[in-house]
Amino acid sequence: MRSFVIIFGVCLLSPQGDAFVPSSTITRSSAIFSGYLNTLTPDDSGRIEEKVQANESVDLASNTKGSDDIRSFLLATSSTDRGQYASKSQKSLIESIISQLESSYSPSEQAPTLSPSIHGTWELLYSNTQLFRSSPFFMAGRAVCKTSEEAKQYDWFCDMHRGALAISNIGKVRQIISEDGRMISEFEVRVGSVPFLSDFTPFKYSGGWPVTIDGAIVSSADATPTADGAGWELLMDTVEIKGSNIPFLRKVLDSGKVKLESRDLGSFLEENIAEYDNPRPVFSTTYLDDSIRISRDQDGKIFVYGKVSDKTEPTDYSGVDADLGVLKLLEGINDNFLKFYI
Image 1 (tube, rainbow, N blue to C red):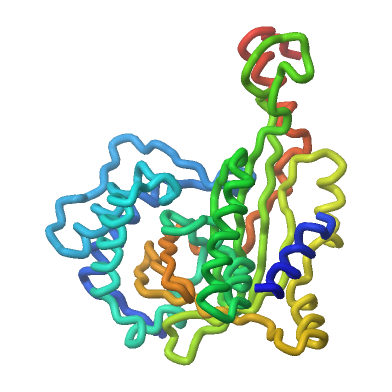
Image 2 (cartoon, rainbow, N blue to C red):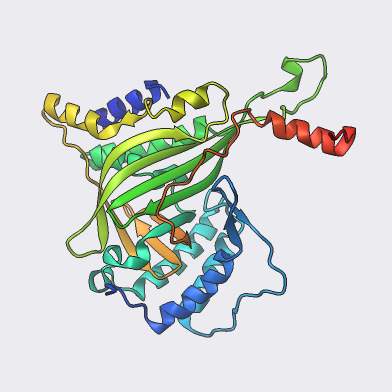
């Protein structure tokens, strides 16, 4: 645990022929899930947005067990914001559905991490823990813990970390799995940049200004399939900030010179701290079809992903303007009130 605190402290202080053939049940389940995923589309900045499609419907008439489980999962998670606001009873229901899907699948026989179906862009749909723990960085942090007591302390630390950042909104959380054995984690965050209007103007107003600080925490790792193909062994590489909309800072961040070289740091610690080993956590896949993946970390914490594309390149954030959203705000004022056009 001490070693992880060292790593996390440095991060905060630094400048900123198929191997798998789905069964007919899984194929029908995938069709239902694809109906939802087909309403998602990437915008010009690479972010994924939902689109409304007229005269299109998802076939929910299938009576197969897998189809019912997928439908039940979608309904149960739809009001929980990926599990963040799930009650104990909702979590119990969702996790029982997940267990049923997992029981219909044999990772040791079907070797999901060796399947071509696993390559692509996956978006986090549900987790029973903090969403940022989908990142290999935080999985590596957990792997540093040697005892159950240290693991419990790490869980508490993660909960407090999220509590300290409660003013931020979590956007898309993705994993991009490539054929060359790389995992890219993208964690998009937005936070109000000017909290209270009355602190800066004579106007008495309880809200903040409609300008935000945006960015994505992007971490990369080598993802080596385990011998049985049921999971990956992860070796952290780098952590960096992409798509920041903060003027001036954006140019520095995009230079590629201010990123945490986690692997190099780990190697340094290995050489200088006798009891430290560069962590290689195992991230298991317990269910996979063409559209849905269920994964668990070393403690069995659940992460359910939906496949949004076969794209294996990281998101391009170059289209994000470094203006704190001020230009968009001014455009809105002009379009709705001033209506001045050249």
